[in-house]
Amino acid sequence: MSGLSPDQIVTLTEILVVLMGIGITWAVYRGSENAELPGDARVPSPEGVDDARPETSGRTL
Image (cartoon, rainbow, N blue to C red; front, top):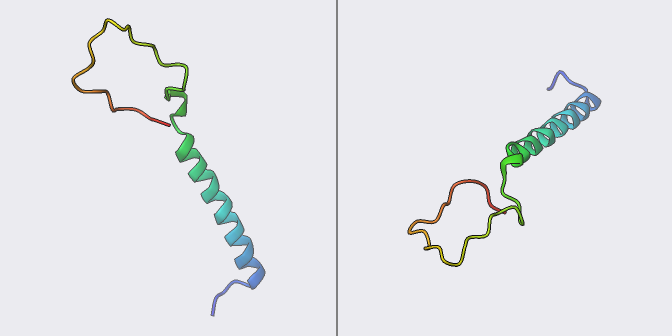
């Protein structure tokens, strides 16, 4: 049998769920200020040559 009462188990579960939500939110938004947003990308000149290997690093939407 657990040493915790049912009310303590519920409270502990609520606290852990809130902390997990904060941790997941932090992990998702960490470094998002460096993301390239729509409209922020530079428009290549039409005379330019296409890259042989497109850049695949960074975040995408």
